[in-house]
Length: 138
Image 1: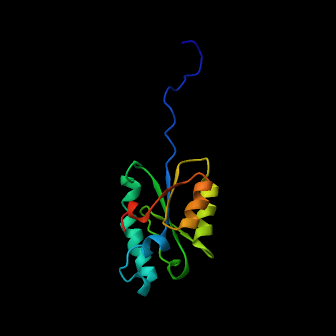
Image 2: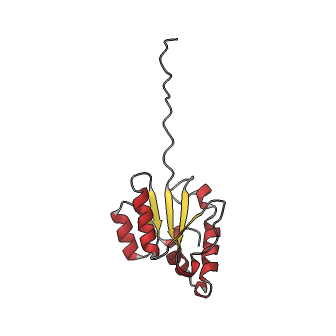
Image 3: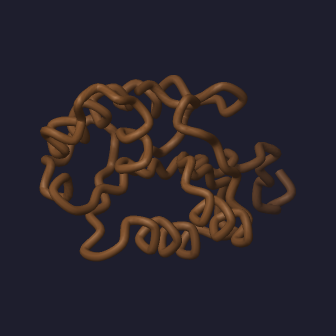
């Protein structure tokens, strides 16, 4: 024994990608009567996203973290303890999403799921990848 500390040859695991879902925009992309029950539509989306942390998305293998940003009448939906995080926007959902992108920028890959043109431009400018609503289970 040389008395030297052991050197680990294993690299740290890569950072877990973050998927931020614009709930209002994704829910609104399917004309299924969501406007009659916005909170119920957001809960259904949350439940359909439940498998994504363990399965990933096309081209983005698991594990991933998923945050659903809710606003307005949908902002009080319950948290699902099994995976999908809920971020409640007190004002603009788009501003909340941009705050999350800024907070996580440079620490891990970030994907924003939305079709909102203005939000897409803002998130891209901060280095996020953008995917449309059809990239997640709706």
